[in-house]
Length: 280
Image 1 (tube, rainbow, N blue to C red):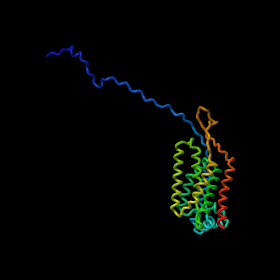
Image 2 (cartoon, rainbow, N blue to C red):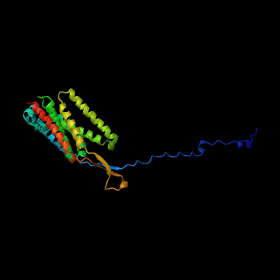
Image 3 (tube, rainbow, N blue to C red):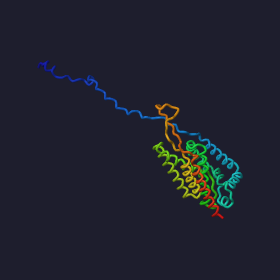
Image 4 (cartoon, rainbow, N blue to C red):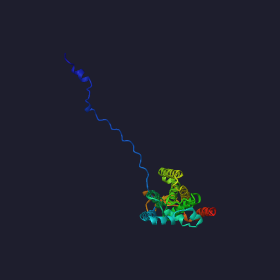
């Protein structure tokens, strides 16, 4: 049977897949415009005092560790002991106890905590404000310890002062929450959890001076509220405006906080005087 060429030609020829014309490529997805970002300049200082405190505490512990007789003398002279402070008037113990530690675990945990918290707080607070928080909060911890703690239970360690740094950083993160956003909120919640955990452990352990921790934390919260940097953003004067360089300017005038600091010290010393009176 003869095929009809005309009818064959009239049929559309199927293309091989390789003969198909290339499909038009889809347009690339629209990318969001780049964020309007800038460089934030935060005024910070090196954590010099923190390093020196770690060195001094570690050196004192090492000397006592190498000489048990010297260690015993240091404890007898310097630890925080209610009868000696409130009845004997040995008020130096309220400070010297911050530089004494019981064992290797005690010094390690405290110095590690001081390194972590001190490096943050001193860098943003500055040396002077950091010293006021550390020693002022540590003093509050020592006073609360001798007034409300065990009468015949001596205490020692830098943990009261370290709790003060923790409280001060919590206040700093809260006061600058709008600037630092979710990261500051996450860090603040972590510090609150850490404080609650340690205070909870203090309630179930007879070896932990929980009143010293509470006093240090309260002192740090108050001193942090008085001394914490409060940042205001403005254009950096050394860069053109289109370069988006922003400087965080601290608007907390510490000189105007003298009254608040005086009231704080009056409250701490007043509590000490109450303890002295009750111990007669």
